[in-house]
Length: 179
Image 1 (cartoon, rainbow, N blue to C red):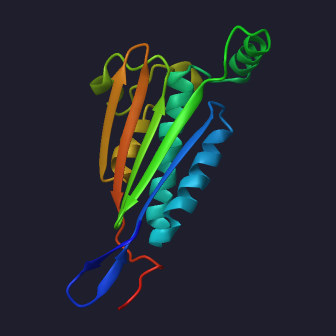
Image 2 (tube, rainbow, N blue to C red; image 1 turned 90 degrees about the vertical axis):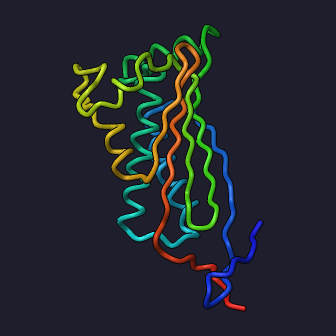
Image 3 (cartoon, one colour; image 1 turned 120 degrees about the vertical axis):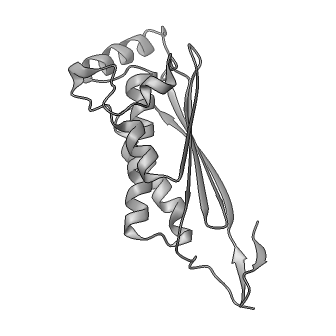
């Protein structure tokens, strides 16, 4: 629903919108999530820098869900999982993405139902990685923190992790309307 707000000189239409996505925890869906969020936030007319920041943060959060939450980090693991699914021994894990726009603020929640994080503080340290053999840099949370205005991580061992991110966009919406 859109509502009007008075900014002093003119009345602008305040944007409100929400979306929910659920997709298979496959590495190729990281690109899908980036593009979906870019399309969703386009109503706010973000700068190229803002859009790049948002897409990078989404990419890092989704990749973390797949690689660390579900421990699907290579062709071998994907093939083993596919075999188990075919045999009825497993179901394809899902990544959940919720987006909300209110005014000029984008809020994103990216959630998995994977293994969870034992020590969130340690996991958020720059260069910390649980998978050094995979050439992971350990910068995922650092990038999310740098590119978004707010980052919170909630996790329960054996139940999964939710990454909350917010970003206020500095440009005006292309759906602005003057009275």
